[in-house]
Image 1 (cartoon, rainbow, N blue to C red):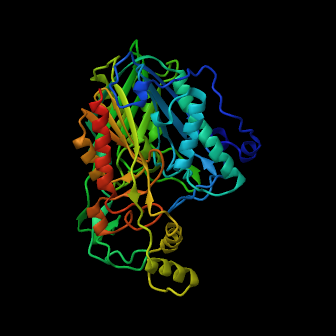
Image 2: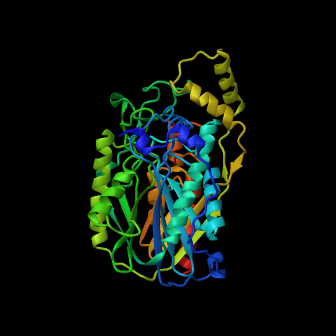
Image 3: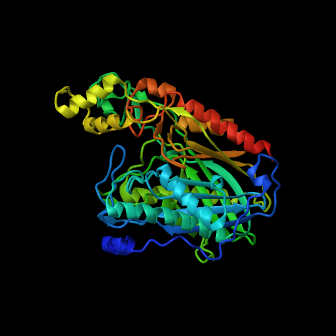
Length: 486
């Protein structure tokens, strides 16, 4: 594809005026006492709306990230979008927005929510915004301080707000259903038990790791951890049965085979396009919106196959989702509850020995053999030493009828996600990860003991060793509280 047909020219973007976000016709929302409390919610007549906004960066924007990166944007293979679903049953209104990008820091998410609240009155705690984790986009967290990157942040936040506001403007009588299926063929573990040192040293020069991501085939003893093959689906129709939106959830890390410096939204838009075709929703007004969110894929490897692999994964998941949709019961009156609560978690800050190591590497006095990512972990170590001793990530639980959604701002291991699903009081439950911020990988305590990438302390993995257990318990508490107030 010609980049400038799908992305913004750098000079045009720099000249663009970022005016205040304004959306005529968006119905104002005034939260009732019910909506702000934990008291009972009635099941009023359901209204739903969906919308999409382009969040593709201009050429020249940075694609660097906490650990890896992909240079700067030089071409656009396929555009990035923010896809939103809004629901309102007369007692609770909420919005779920999924964005085609790797990660989003909390600062940008909070700014987008603030813009929506200013325009619509929707409470900030009634919005869930997440990233899909495609690896071929800008990492929306501290990219650089160039004028272009600063302006893209502003554009990105406003376009997310626009998607949510338009979804609210599209609210109309609707009905809703939910279901799930198993799709094991695309989920595979990427961590393997090894003999310590068999894959060489880690970035700190240590030979102690007993698990290794993508270990050399001859060193693999067995795969580590579990997988979650679940495909969960929330299907929304107009009152007359026309397709309105599908929100799906699956736990694949991403697909691989991107070209360097090229933007791609990965398999997520492939799913959206295919489910639209299968539901014959092409002529819907307002337009149908297909949405795929990322579940719990911190320990799951990518599906290989390049751009053709993206089509294969997206199309296959859409075909399965279509089959589930055909068998659903739809409801025009459902309880809707959304709970939001922060959780204080410890930070694994480097000790004096690790800080001394980083400074020795920078000074050129540390000469041991180490993993080729050594210099990345040096920078991360010196950043982590200035982190606070604790952080307070945001977590949400949503009940829609007998469906539950638990959100977290991490790359959650499948073990933890499955425990949340199994402990939920609701019929179908799924996790939306990388939501409302980014707090890195979430290995279980057992996996922390084995070491390896995703446990090495860095900006991409810094929460306390017991964080996954605390987050699991917190998610189940919120889900149970949500289901108990109906």
